Length: 337
Ligand SMILES: Nc1ncnc2c1ncn2[C@@H]1O[C@H](COP(=O)(O)OP(=O)(O)OP(=O)(O)O)[C@@H](O)[C@H]1O
Ligand SMILES: [Mg+2]
Image (cartoon, rainbow, N blue to C red; front, top):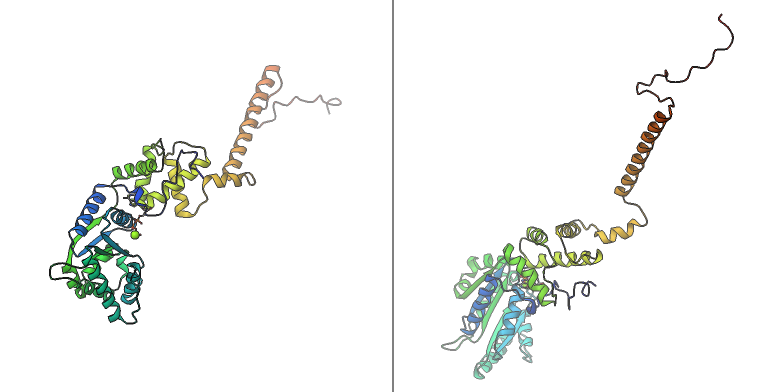
């Protein structure tokens, strides 16, 4: 809708975890480097945690793009599965034509697959996103999967990705064996105010903007205040701002535009451009009061003008005390009584 107006090729603040838009803050860069290292060096269990909407899935997808072709990935993003569902899903994702009907048979098929991969010099990686939702028994069963190994090498890397609850879950006494096997952990957090400013510019640039200063400094400050530096919230807010700026034909988006977008997100208030359309049918209360004020000023001016003219022409002018002495005295009728 607003793409042409702002000279963009595509929406800069989309909701999907598209690696093309990855902004590498110092923490994202460090986490990505660690993940690549962990997978290449076959660290076994790797755990990536981060607050909601801070870019875990985006980072994960970037990692998958950067791994070499000898890595075969099974990617589970439905963590509501139990271990049976999870195994079925993983086998299918790795292209195993499963005929298993029991847990033992599925484990057997998985083992066969992993040994075959090992023979071919391939390195399978099982990625479980949103792993904070896995139950403790499922996590424990996932630990058992890591027992597939040769005498000197794990046959599969397992990457658990999730919100901070995952970290808490791994601290449960029932999962201390899994915790002990984690070879590498990384954590990402929200962006700092300066990073958030660069993030906005970065996404605008990737989306094709030649002018990446669409948001004024004050607007960026408001965006940082509201979002706390969480990229997903920044995206939602910036997208609303662009839409409302476009409706107002504003090339520069200031703090006021951000405030309105926040109001809309918080209260479900209609954005100004919609309200203005409705105003054609029903005048806004502010407009009615402004009109009343205007009329009062005009009446006052007319009164002053009239008083001035009357004085100049010698007409009687009423005094401010309200007495009637100024009225001309009518001639008396008849003589004295
Ligand atoms: N570093 C980043 N660079 C570019 N975009 C990002 C970054 N981090 C997050 N985003 C954007 O923010 C949104 C949310 O990102 P993502 O889904 O990766 O977060 P998440 O941490 O996986 O969230 P959740 O906790 O809900 O799983 C996406 O639109 C994504 O493109
Ligand atoms: Mg995610």
